[in-house]
Length: 337
Image 1 (tube, rainbow, N blue to C red):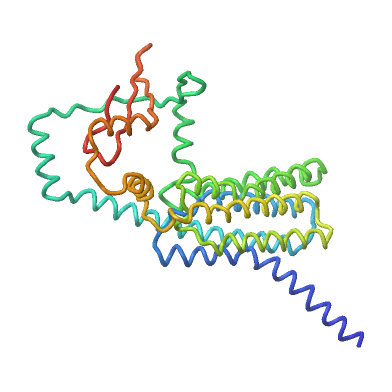
Image 2 (cartoon, one colour):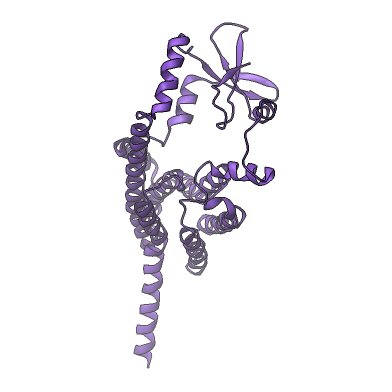
């Protein structure tokens, strides 16, 4: 009887360890199949991959310096492989869709070709001025440094997987050097533990922000978020049962709250999710008017007034120009105010 009890306990413990290693990756595998089937990567935020890659790389070096459970190390290594595969798929689908969109733009219809030819014969096309980006804050306009704007616009949205691989290898090299120098320091162990847990705790935040900006959850698998929730609940209970570091327990608790927030977005944006991109706004405007009709010039001006303006500095001191982008329902071009 004692041997049977020991065998049952052995199997249960190893099953829990296996669930801790494999369980967190199941949701991302499902997301890979969903993106591959729909050939749509718009609903998934690549910052999720960034957060998990950085957090698990830090966790691996945390294990090297402190040496806790091997199960957590195995889970981190498997998650790294899973995120690399997911990121590669996301980049491939994104590049394919952008190439298709570019080809479609180069094939204008006959009416568009006639209009463009007529416009070119009447109007002289002038080169666009080189504008410097600015940001408006508290009623004042500030210049944005070129390097900061470039990082904000392009970081982690590269066109090639090689760029992501170079960034990851550089980060691993830096962490290997730092860990090799300070691996025996208790202060460094606390710092890297806090950094790993804090980064992973922010896992769902980029996805929540992306859903909020798009006002829908299309392209995102609800099963992925449900697995996030189940996995985070399981991780919290596992960390508490195995007396894992408190930073890991706090990370899991914060992730549970984030998962619940993202699940609530599926309900809030349920009416917009089934619509194609950009159709949600048109659908809302149609529901207010009751039927589709032509927009009058006065209504067009009111609609444009609701669109925020973007300020640019033309390089001359004391001279700024404000550009307002009109609605896509109008055939006009961006106007200078």
